[in-house]
Image (cartoon, rainbow, N blue to C red):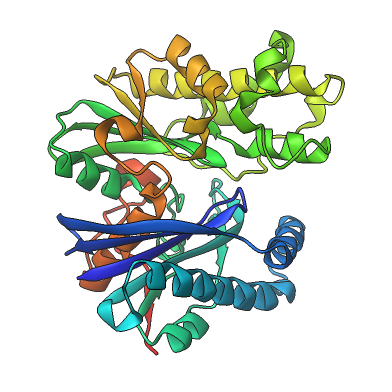
Length: 368
């Protein structure tokens, strides 16, 4: 099947797109990949929807802004794809499926006696009408309803990607998005995965709140700052880090308040150290040392984060491009792959990746 996958991360940076030819098991070929930056109008509405989601009490009706934001996100996806497909000499009838992750505005992990909540906004029915193709969406709800974490979902694709590259276990894939998550492949189809802690999200929020841009481009601020070890220790005292995997996080799980007394450069350096130390603890929790750590996501473009990881992790740390992977497109590729699996009723989440009781399929199909 030829599948177009869409991903919009919690960085609120862009609509990522990637094309795969896949049966949901093997990757038969890689099509083009690209992105289009989110419009300011959509980004502002999503930011407001996120704030309202964080204040949304369980049992209460969902915030009305969700409907408006979902429509804007679908329209943004369609507009991004129109330009992308034209440049790639493709058209909508070429595709068997479209996979849309949607924009995460809330992610709460389950607690004893209670299910989690995970909300991804995107009007799949509208997108299906606009593009005339079947859209697979809502990949997390079934997992959450069964008591799973609902995240991370990319590990089964990480496995397929490693196999397609002819790589050998034990290997780890570390995705540095808004949140960092690791997939450990020990052999066969055996995977362990969980969120290790912050990725780029806290650093992005810090820079934005200080009025210094959207993110710490090239590690400019962190590179000249000094790490406040006491703040790092305080952040690592969060109970999340002693909880056993599998486990998951929201981008807003940790407060920036401990960093307020620090100047921007020192605060950025401290967050880089926090991110890297959390990843280190994640690997210690796994109790296994991979031969290599392959890094995907936007964080691999920050040399300070990559340096901090290289100093702490028990294996060589290399960007995805070292294996010919498209580091910025892995998540969109994963959504295309998951869409194909969902269409065939194949599992997309597993006990050792999300804590779900049994391997489960997920996603919902909307036809035009």
